[in-house]
Length: 581
Image (cartoon, rainbow, N blue to C red; front, side):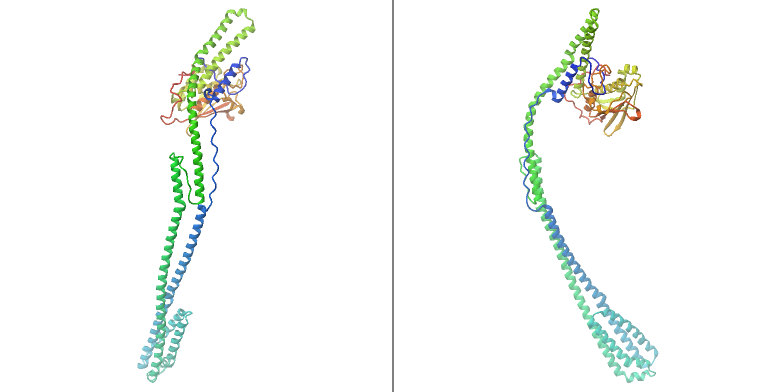
């Protein structure tokens, strides 16, 4: 098999004379790619028209129900909170009145009585004996009386009955002190004076005792009433809080029942219908219940179910049609394989005969031919050789991805060195300097990756600049999920406007007189890279490196074991003779 020449960087028009066969092969190849394997497929059946949207259900939506329910619940809770706050405040007021006034007032009244009794005892002892030590309890009782009276005055506050009782006690005590106690305490003969006024003093102090007893009876009655009020308020508080708890429990039950009947039950029914459809029962209808939005959702799901049922019916009919087309495609593939065999063997023999006999004709009858006849013979030989090269290139291009490839671990460093050795003569003649980064081991087809590296390296050597020796470098860097490689050179470069067109098969930027090749190299590189799951692009070299071209391609990490399969059970045919084995 003849060795294919590396392709050029770009697109263009071949101005060489015998270029008709190249354009015919280009048209034929494009036709094969547009219609798979050249099989005419009947147009698919028309898809079912989309169903009309269902009418929008009327009624309250879930949001409206929730808003209304939440508002009512908050109003009830606010009312209960106000009621509870009033009960708490009332209970606090009753308790404070009992603790801060009634009880302290009764205790102060008892201390007042004790102070008056101490005065009476002291002044009576002084009046009987005339000894000064008996006057001390009287003086202390006066101080205690004034203190207790001020305390009771503060505790009575706005209570008229308590204030009247305190005034009565103070008035009676003042009358007894004025008429009996103070004269005896100030007299030089207290014993005689006390004896003369004993009956009057006893009568006045009995009036004091009666007044203070009345005061204590009123205070005790008020304290008893306060305790009763406190017990009543506590009972009311307990009943109120129990009622609040009962209302809260009732609200909780109502919310639970409302959510159950209005949300969860309709959603559960809708979920059950959807699960039946998901399990394959596409004929099961979806019925909506509950608020308007849930019924609208059920209507949308039902519309989707009908659409899926129509699409499934369409898919079944299309699958039946594809079954017939698959049989036709298998027959067509068999014919294409036969064509490939004929093109690789039978068609090349006539081309070799044409070239051989034309050359034999020139050698045997060369002295009888003029320059024009020799030129015609050269055209014929060149056309036969180029036709043979085009057939080989086209076969190599069509085999990429169509047959089972031998995917394995490929050491790119070793493969690049062997590829460089295969074109060592061109590298040596061009005085090219070829370098590369540390290259990894990737997963792929060794033969196809060799074709990729050979075409890229051959292009870099072929499209060198006449003004400087070629500098070619293959860079590699790790990316997420794979490797990125860059083949850069300092050659003639390429314009950005041709960055996409250079990957079109049989397209050229230069004539054959300038650069040899069939215009298939980069198209073959793109097909190899994409077959391995990567991407390839071409552009100008980095500005820091000067003019030139940079070709970037990626190779992903190997798939899981057992995922690499081919499109057929056949092994890849023999590689071109120019590739390392």
